[in-house]
Image (cartoon, rainbow, N blue to C red):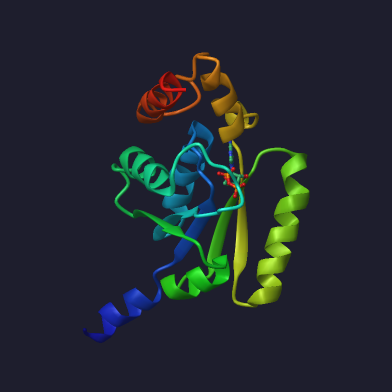
Length: 171
Ligand code: ADP
């Protein structure tokens, strides 16, 4: 590797967008598209959290995210079960991206960001505000609508709509 390549590699800004993504919605996807423009590389990391009772397995959530971000070359999809900052060290990343929808998100997000900062001084959290048309949208709302066979075509990408239909057809 010559000096220029080494320098380029050094300057690559990697951000991690962690979350449950159960399942990915148009709101998440909007943040992913916008963050992918700002950072050199964006790792969307699905939290393997055993304390929540997810509808989709981690593998299913990762697969759906891969499908809906296939057109974004600098986006990588991964999962983790470790403490976020340990996972970030592994990935050599220092930036966390989170989305803010409403004031109600703020308190929890501030608590998380402050905790991560306390655990590692190198970590910075960047907040991106939701696009207004998706500011009410959450994975929970989507599941609630889909469970009663309501239309979710405007809320999630078509791949996710299909996956929801399949899930709830068998329930
Ligand atoms: P978590 O369980 O970590 O909150 P979520 O999948 O619910 O995981 O959300 C992951 C991140 O995406 C959070 O920062 C959340 O605020 C953000 N987010 C979720 N829905 C939207 C949306 N409609 N617009 C913008 N950001 C969103």
